[in-house]
Image (cartoon, rainbow, N blue to C red; front, side, top):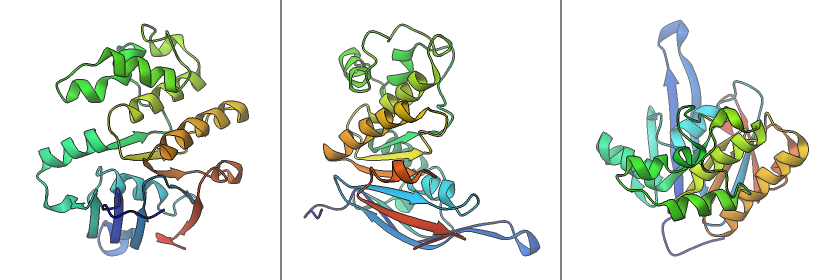
Length: 223
């Protein structure tokens, strides 16, 4: 799918190197990738191939050693730390494998956290985000009162709330049974079909089948 507008996410010749000398590790090696609106791209590859680093760089959580990350056409490297944090909070939603829910906050407060950090609260948006993942009426519960599958859906609702144009998901089905995993992928697919761009790291070919295309990663390189 092409558009006259800048792509939501472009990685342009991105490399990421950690350590020096004998400890030098090239996690990403000249990676270029563009995600268009309405496109879900799956990334597969063995452990240690660079998949998680790719997501961290795409989500502005890790600065690349070289190359550029463009979010809606804006070069993230030219932004101040504060501006980059605002851009990440407003435009990028990340679904972590281990959920990363705050145990002392309710389900609704966890989902609304990106809005709270932006200085606003929108109970209607929170309820809608929970409804989108099939968790209506659960806003007042706490993370230890829900199942693993429900916790993953809460994490997805948090990633989807607000005008997010980029959705990044790191093995979002890793701890789920097959039917719950399919439901979680369905939610991601629905949001992408509505116009977001999605990047999904998975080791399961059946889940990669939800994507529009699949790229393989090995030794820090995409193929």
